[in-house]
Length: 146
Image (cartoon, rainbow, N blue to C red; front, side):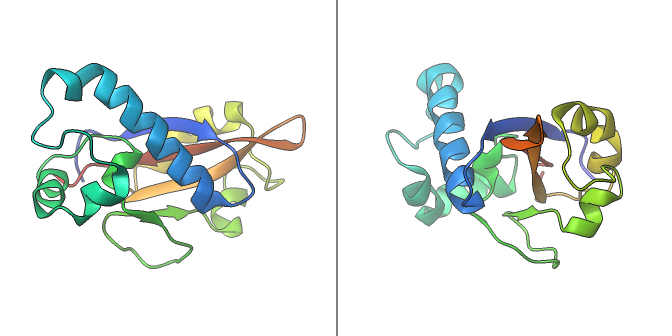
């Protein structure tokens, strides 16, 4: 397991794949505003889909990555461990730390160490977070591949 685990939240959409792409767009805009503007690492002006088609980007992610949702090329509902794929938690995985199956941001914050411990290199997870019993945002976490 790597030592650079990360967490972040993004906007909620009923379609979790669309919410994931929106979170990636926000992370990319933030990265460009901060680090990639100073050192674009050879990837100027490319969108996330174009980045993942670039072998140099794939190598960059495999040898370090960004420590954000940008390290994953898609969100896939699966119970298999697939590198560089963001995977939503199953209901059983959620109720293990949020018994009603509707985790709040506070429950997610309290469970983060427990959620990060089993994450291996190049793995990412997510779950919907609730506020006042309504979906409010998506919590993402993972570990770079380095």
